[in-house]
Length: 261
Image 1: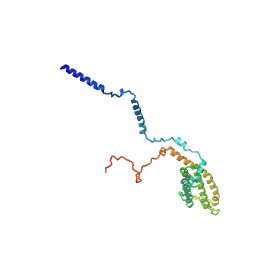
Image 2: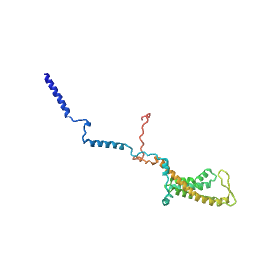
Image 3: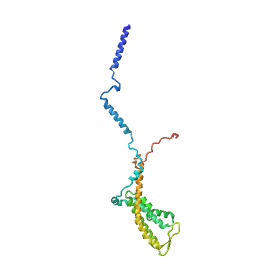
Image 4: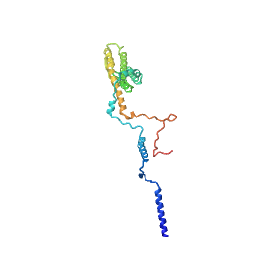
């Protein structure tokens, strides 16, 4: 009986070993065959492509250096191209808005010569060099800002010549007029009439040169602001609209202490 039990146990152990011997090797390190190479290569390709897909589509814009923005804001003058674009420039709002402001300044100072605001408005938008008008024109001109500034200065000089001629041309000689704003300043009509041609000539020559220079400086400053600020260079993302034309609100988190309705 004891011998039969030992024989049965030995037979059971042999069957158990045979069962494990028939099963395939499940250890991944033991399989060194060639078919695993494509699988490993595809796994590496997927791993390398994952960061590229997860990264942002548009990388963030870096702020350029001030020296680089300063140098890149200068542009050479294209005289031929600017002259060809002259018909388009004189119909642009950056030209006729300063012209209207210049004419308005001359008219206000003509009818209100003692008013301080009218005198200040006349000083900025008229005179030998209308600084406010040429800076406005140069900053918003689409191109050829120097040419637009010179034209605005010439138009301002013509308005000024017409105003001085109307104001002092009809006055009799050998009389004194008060030309002061906040204080009395008596000037002879003979002196005023004699200085009108000199004043207008200075406005047409020196004023036009200064107008071109300051308008070009305003255009340079606009380009400098565009290059120095990365937010101005960021492309605008289109906003999705609902069928009724309204812009949907952004998803905002509910405050912790907000009441539930």
